[in-house]
Length: 209
Image 1: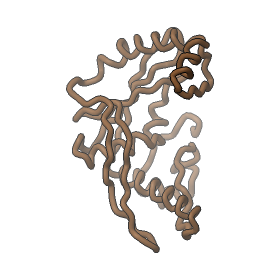
Image 2: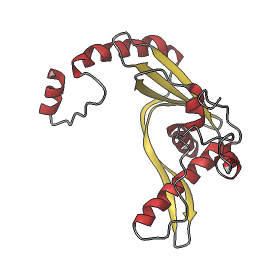
Image 3: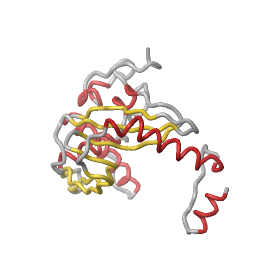
């Protein structure tokens, strides 16, 4: 496809996954229209776009040493009323799934509160554009609290521990992964000692009912 060739000539690596490059131009134009029509009217003005952040979160001590935990990234749009992130997707998002499982929103909410950009409870909004020639936009809102912050810190520490184990240090715990519908009060016998200890009961997903 000419668009792919042009990008490669500019020295940019192009990774094509589950899309047809010959339809990119049409889809991009359609998604842009969907963003302006279905998402932009709900976005508050006066915020910051492409806000890069590096946020100190906490100090963590293990059996060997103490280290600092930082979160960094780029927020598509941040406003005192909440955070916005633009997404493209093959199908609409499930609000209940994002509320119970999404990690990005917890990371960004934690960073934003530590940087003084907003306060808990944080509204995190996905502005989703469906990838097709007649795209529609969708606004999906999830909320994140200080309890979600405590849980995402626990998850992150478990990942750090796993990485350190690769360097020969003792592994203190397994990685905590809550990205499966069996991670729930209904199916997991240690829910109340793990995620449930931090965020409490969660609504059932359709696949759990």
